[in-house]
Image (cartoon, rainbow, N blue to C red; front, side, top):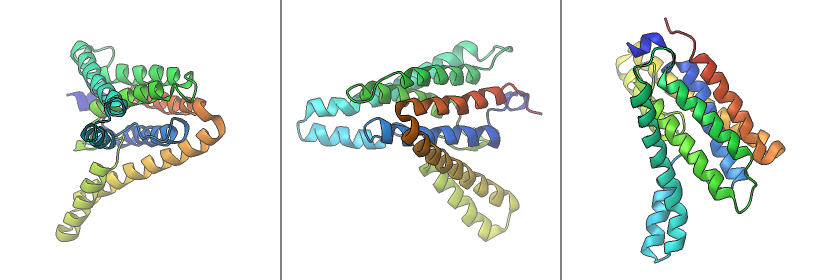
Length: 220
């Protein structure tokens, strides 16, 4: 079974990926034009609003990152299909390696009029991460946004208060733990972006490199 041979669904890896997710949100907001590149709900809302108002050029501004997000999912599924049966490398390791390379290129993109390209690439990375890492210890979770984790964590805590089942408490704490690491990543993103500007994204590359290294450890 996949879960017995690699570390892709462990809390350790999930916490590092959540830090990377929070970091990227802070980075794109502070260094790339005050946008959040992780989740696309806001872009979809703004796309609809601009279409309704007849602002088609403005609408295209929000359509591009949405399409980049979709492209990231397509790429991830293609990688999964091609490498899923490989024994020497796991397809998720390839995805993380691609994320690192893409974010390294983002660091080289100047701020200002080129921010759209940077944000599109970050959206691509985030969609690849969302598609690749969807569970933590067997429970559905995300590492690039918090809404679902907050809902699931709260639900498990409520159910624990009703049943006193320890497993529910552990799962609830796990969801809240991922949120805490996301917040920590956002805080690090603020600190490093204020100091390194567009190059701060390289710190996120370090986080993902650590995650990649962990994935070479065999899960027992």
